[in-house]
Length: 224
Image (cartoon, rainbow, N blue to C red; front, side, top):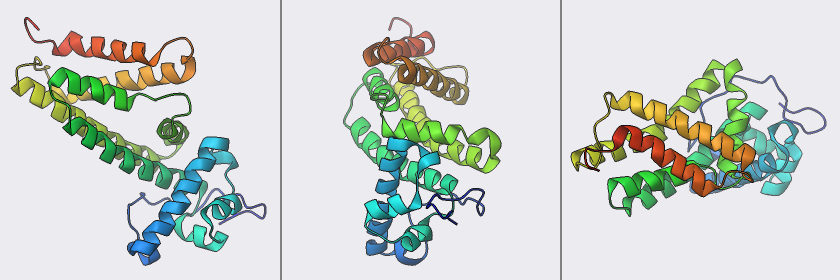
């Protein structure tokens, strides 16, 4: 539902997990293109003003659609945020896996992964969406669970990098691979937040170096 001023109202119906395709128009190519226009418009607005100031009428205007059409896809501010984050993460996932596939050597692949994970700059769209979503997770178990599902895609790619590095003899095997990937993603999150908060003090290159150093503490093979 929407307030009279065009703001997407909260609270709203239960948020459903974002999906790449939905029933109805979005199950067709034309419907998918329309949905993508809405998501791009929502992304632009969230980056510019934050989710709390996003207005349905402006999303619709930028997408070249009616407010009613936009409301087909979104039921609340929370829903629009999660759908947009899932959409952005899907695009990031495709780019990440294509990029990593072209990198040889376990340490080089891990460093590339780190570079893809950390924010490019304080206006990084993916990180703006993540920060907005994280702020809601402590109050909504469903949101928290969904964010876990998204971050697990990063953990899956990290696990594959580490496992292949171990097989190649480039990495020493950590005591527990699942525990390592959980800890290491937490390290990257911490560095990312420092970078977003202090980008003028700590260069992105330095953040990547910190992350590689942290990995070497556990993964450096004997004599490596």
